[in-house]
Length: 297
Image (cartoon, rainbow, N blue to C red; front, top):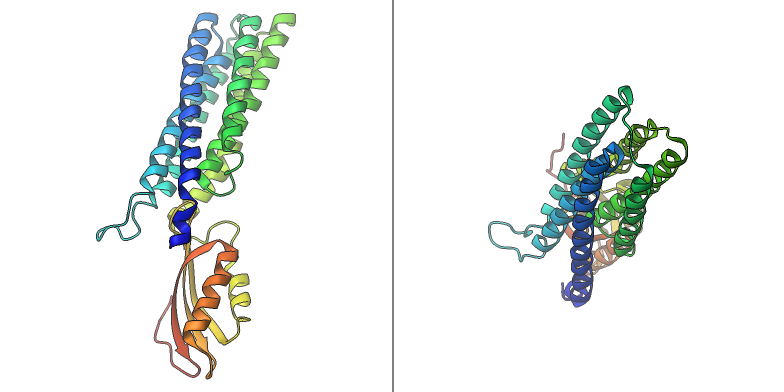
């Protein structure tokens, strides 16, 4: 347990700063983009601003869950509030889906009735969006594979940067050609990109909230590998789930060879499990020939 806390403070401070900087940058940009969208009657800008607003909310929720996960366990919540990180990732995915349907609905409405927009203004505002979204994405790039919430933040910002590039391109096209229908078409593109970027987050979040085996972990491979640990005759009743978006747990029944030391075998297994990203293990030891009374459906 001591090792877990040794490196936590610098990382926590860096991620805390990243979240705060990302929230402030995107909140300011949302106000600018909404104002520009209404002023220039651009659905592409308004829809992108709406999505950026959901990103501000998502970043704020992720920061809240990140801090809540570090609250110490208590008798009522023996794992603390670590599971809140999974709940927040699910809420963020659902927020994105609501935003997608709103953007697509408005875009299809405007496809039927295209309206004139200022292509130059759209291009300038979208150009600012490329910079802000790109900078925000870079804040999370180092830690994105270690936490589902951070990965979600990174994917959202990276997708937004690409969407802003699309809006920038539409503004340039409209400025030179006057093809106003490009504006709602980009709105549709925004919706599709958001849907694609959020689908994996939704899938992984639902999987973890249902205590499914976390993505990237193969329970069969782990069982096969643990049977090769010296002193282990067999291993069964394996359950693997996520305590949070960064910590995984395992319970299992371990059958020992007659001469094996239970303490040494359990220590070897726990060390081995860290290679698979499993930091919490509860192991029940059995002797060869012992009848296991656990019944599973």
